[in-house]
Length: 402
Image (cartoon, rainbow, N blue to C red; front, side, top):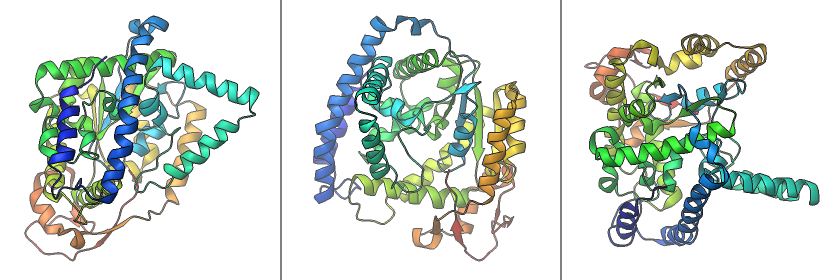
């Protein structure tokens, strides 16, 4: 069990005394968010910690479970990682990933057993009435979330597991006090090694539980936040394979700036349309350069580096390339899943359109700041080779879901 009481107290104090003009400024909606947060989250944190402890009594076999050659999909937010993880996770004969309810509601085996028991009781005695009600709540509360498809039974990023211990950069959204969380968005380099080891032991224990419950299958996760945990993950899982997805910085900045703005508006009422733009841009740069530098030093068998355009442009070929390197075989059932997904992607048209000018950016500004990324991956402006010192017309961006 692990809980970062120091960070819990620091962020709580900041929320009440240092909100100022941050996205968490104390105005109407923010007070309501904090009320419900502190009414529900600490109780859930406590019950989760107790349930994790009970796992050692009720399900002790999980402790002997190996997490063999896990697959970590990383890259900046909005780089295609959700598409890739959810597709690969449908190969249920070989791989397993965590669904949203397993991450946030029931990370322990004890909690999962409780909810499954309740489900069986509901089915037999109530005709599935509770399940249908839960599906309605899921559609109403999660179905309307923009930018990223979310649902209790959807595969999602397991960095959320660290919310139970208060050891994650994800807390920058409900608590936008960025300096307090700096060690977590530069995990490998800024968080003390002793704390890193505690966090990684906690994470490994949660993966052991999940893999044990799913028959020892190979685990696959996608986490943008893992861009800054490459060394910690490699220490913890020496046989891990990393898949890094790189998207054109112009699209990444436009999409990520809008995405972060949207989340901060969920948790409060920022005065700016696009708050913390300098932070967002710096974070994007670090999450390009840091993981790539670490991956470049790894043996080729442990890393796959892909362009977003190649993923969405040749999904079938990309999946076959990944499976060849992972040593996995595509069986007929999964082959049909890939074909279905490829066909669906052909007809997909994003509803997300962003204006760089409204965010205070220009393409040439971004190309200059990320010249090394443009050069490495051959990215360009308006589909052309990047001309860092030249001028090219701005465009309205159409950005697909990650």
